[in-house]
Length: 304
View: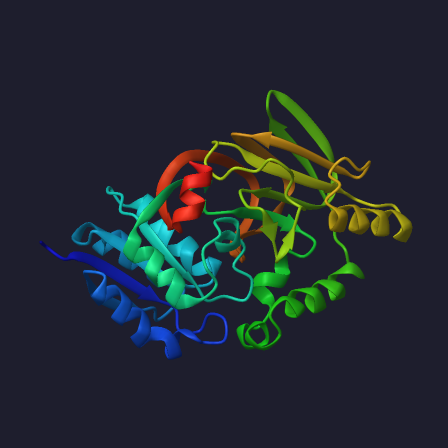
């Protein structure tokens, strides 16, 4: 029987760099599982996207280890290519929101064994103008935290790094006047934060992306936080988010396949925790079941 060929892409700086300690064990699991492994270590941002787009067709599947940003690059490369291959993910970042949503094991060797078993789940992917994202596109308060927080700080502090950096933002909250077009209606208001998600958690916090979330239903969850007029309203917003109450007077939420957001000034966006550029207009679309992500057997049975 021909051994399946896997392209294994590794971001050595994600998380605390623990992939270095687990790499031989993972390779051993792959080889014992009948996989022929080709290793690629990323050298710079967007490297994974380039490699997948150029080389994925030569392999039976693509695996990667890193944070959600690494997975984003791999998925983007696959979306930009003319072929589709199953994608395996060994999470090694500091939050791993998307991996948690898919119940991918936190232990690297267990995640590697899932890749060998090759149980796939068809996941939605978002397009953001000409770019792609896996689980979140966002602007406003806290969005600069993930891509401006130093990687070494993330490695040491984990979730706390986001909280500490986010706390600094509260005292200098910037609002944006935007027009939102979705589901046949238009909304114009001032917002301090907006996110379009396909995940059960953001920044490690659960329940702030809505309820009844499925990652393959062709729908994104849209959450927009209105600009508070004083500190009391701001505190009410934070309390609502922590409790997962999306029906606040200051929070609007929708499910949609497509949303267009326009503004008079260019707004900085983040895609899967990485800088996504400054834009005056963005069109975000959900591509249903666009890529196959390898998950554990139990998740595949319960969700599909």
